[in-house]
Amino acid sequence: MHPEHRAPVQTSGTPPERVSSFNAQSLKHNADRIRGGYNQREGNYTQGGTSLHLHHQQQQQRKHQLNKSGGGMRGAYYTSEESVRERNFQQQDGFGPSRRSSKGSDNLPDKLEEALVLNDDSTEVSVESHSKSSRGKDVRLDLFRGHYVSSQRVRIRRRELECRYDIDDMTPLFLAIYRSLIPAEEEKEKQKQLLVSLRKLVNKEWPDAELHLYGSCANSFDVSNSDIDICLAIDDSKMSKSEILLKLADILESDNLQNVQALTRARVPIVKMMDPVTGISCDICINNLLAVANTKLLRDYAQIDERLRQLAFIVKHWAKSRGVNETYRGTLSSYAYVLMCIHFLQQRKPAILPCLQEMEATYLANVDGVQCAYFDQVDRIRHFGAQNNESIARLLWGFFHYWAYCHDYANDVISVRAGRNIRTLSLTLECCFYDSKQLKDWTRRIGNDRHLICIEDPFETSHDLGRVVDKYSIKILREEFERAADVLQYDSNPSVTLFEPYVPRSLQNGLQSD
Image 1: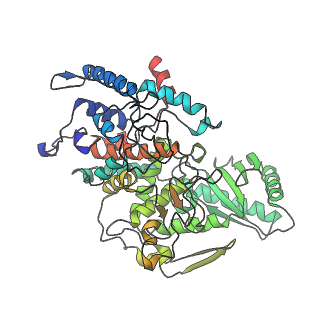
Image 2 (image 1 turned 90 degrees about the vertical axis):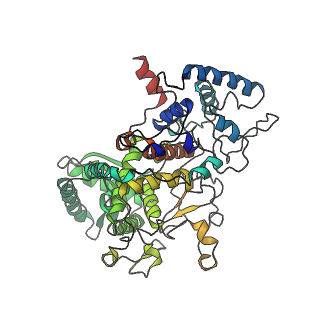
């Protein structure tokens, strides 16, 4: 939908010249989209004496005409005139439903997108069709999501959209949300207390072993009531990793720690446990020192500018509320979202964060053959982003606007190591040593690894954190990015609407029937 057709911001004191024209169908479409569902808002919206009920009848007639002429896609139809105009647009870059030819062929390549909006009937058809090919991974897929992804033409048009004029007034509200997510000092003390007791326990069996906190609990991006991750660094060639884990589980159980489980066959083998004294749950892995190095890098970035923590906390809270922070469902990890925030702030003009790996290395480590090197004397560059005075509300709008409309998913690699998109760097002679998406061979599916959104690990550069995202969940992610951008641009109370929990369609129907 063109920005001119969107609902105006319903805030007091809005200048008349800032209120764009819109029609009734656009208003209902925008309201439904902001709330992340289909036909959730019911009411007699009217404009110019024309009822939406009459408009709906007209849409039904257009639906049958499109399907009869082969213009629809297995029952799908376009619910706005703009979508009809978009459906044959040639230049597309996403992974949504593709266009049909004039002959009504069923050629549906994965790597095309269309501004299709499906009604309830066509969604049921989509559910039945996708369920037969879901490969038994139903938990990864919510088939009622991902149908509101804009076409390339619409995305290009929206890139020029300017931020709402009152965005900075919302900064206090978002800062209040950020402060509410910060763990209390008491909670941090309990984590330290648990780490000390575990070190004493482990050193009785392995005197030279070390325990390191890593992940969110150590990189300063942890929220309240988080579990903690610990790495056991041990050099014991006489025992395999599985044997060490089983021995560790026995040690923990002997000290009356609860819910001890040794998961030796997991992708990252761990021992899970819960400390009854502090109430903290903990995962312990073996010799995952690269994660420890990544943790230090993120912690150092967080010390440069406080806006990184503010942005990352709010984005993580949004992702959890909207159900797009679970890798087993094909969405992104908290670590990936933090890297996206760093990448975004590196690209601001002027930049808010530097590229630490591009500066003279003051931290050097070789971890399992991987060179970890970057500038870690961040006390010297704490005012790096001082020339950029953007508020957290404006940065939050810019973050979602970027991922909704500006990022090139088909070609770009998100790289904190490079400080910008790798494709852009590879086009310049002086930066040709960087890998592009093509050189990384991240342009096609390899086994279970898909590369529909490419997020390079800062040190292990062959590792794509977006590999878990599939052709269904990429549409859900992009739809949620667009919803968030719309909320921040048009909603009268974005600090509330942005974090409205996503309710699956099946649960919505159950609640309505009750």
